[in-house]
Structure formats: structure tokens, C-alpha cells
Image (cartoon, rainbow, N blue to C red; front, side, top):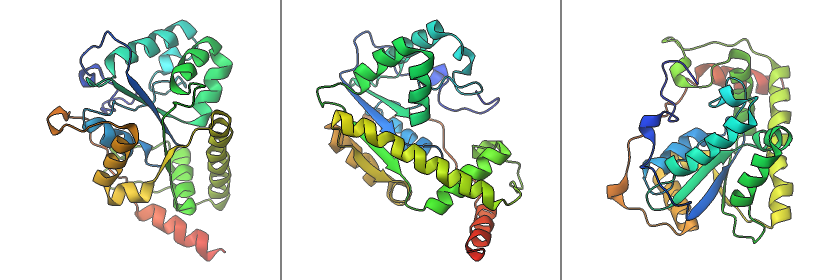
Length: 253
């Protein structure tokens, strides 16, 4: 967890405890730096579309990094979030990256089987919302700068912003990693014959209400304005240094 920063995983943001299993489940499938946190909080804020965060992220330093070496604790966390993070109308959402799924397969095959059986059933009933970015260069720069600086959220930035030394090699490496991560979803969707609802980050930022409507319609969920909940604000990080990186990269051809 990030010290002094509300990320949404805190207990005070739980929905009322639910005894019954979720009635409707969906996956927010994405890759790092695609704007998935912004979208997940938009959907969560409705109070009708679950709270799709990274509940299977057990990487050291991650949200549940304390359980990185404990399959038992990982399973307990998973079973707990199903009760605490399912919205009152029975909808449960989870945000996933291909890397997290592959790591879970290797480190905790029992939980992997349990979770994927619910999230990606073999009867073609899986519901997947896929978030992508059109601007590959901006995406790669965002990932490269965050990786090099360790700054992943606006709340981590100093007041005067952050400057990261430019590296074309870092951008190229980031672009390759992101491309591989994106294609990592395709075999799974093909195998399960899943047709995801694809949203683009740029459209979500420009028309957030439209994105929420599309997801609700895709899941056949009625949005009730009275069900809205307060969630942590997702603030946009400073863009000036990123723009300088983009200009220099393009100038280099």
C-alpha cells in the first residue's frame, strides 16, 4: 500500500457485507498505464457496478504484497473481497493484467483455478470489459517514466511536478512490454470465445458518462443514482515532462 494515500482498498470503502455469492461478475482487462484506475473508480462510483480493483495483485509492494509468499492468505483475501466488494445489487468486478494472472497460475494454482472458474467460465458466459489506449507512444512514455521514477500516482508527485531523464531506449522497451502484455489477453479470449466490450482510454477521459453507460448496458445492469458511493479521487498526473519526451522521441525519428 502507499503510505498516506487512499487507494480504495481501505476497509472504509467496502460495500455492506454480503453473505451470498455475486450474481454477476465481470473482468476489467487491461495493461499498466492504460487509465484502468480512472475507469475502475468511475464504475465503482455508481454503486451498481462493483468495485473493480486489483484483488489478485500479490506482488511485493503491491496492494496485497504482504501475502506474496502465502497462498493461504491470498485465498483468504479473495474470499473476503467477494463478500466486501460486491455491490448491493450483486455485481462483482475485478481489474486484471496478464502478468498478474500468469503469476497467480505459477504461485497459487489452487486459487488460480478457483478465481478463473468464476471469472472466465467455460460456458461462454464470461463478461469482459477491455480497456486500451490508441496513442501507443503516450502509453509507452507513461509506463517508461513511471517505471524509472517509481511515481505511479499524482499523489506521489512533489508540488512542482517531477522530471525524469529522457531515454529513448526506455520508451522502446516499454512499448515492447506493453505490446506483449496486450497480446497476452488474445489467446485467453480466443480459447474461451469471449467477445469483450472494448473501450479506449481517450474516449473514457473525454466522455466518462458514456463509458459508464456502455458498461452498464453490456452487463445488463440498471444504474440507480441513489446507489452512488464516495470513492477516492483519481487525479491526472502532470503532463509537461511527458510532452517533452514525446517531442524528443518524434524528433529523433
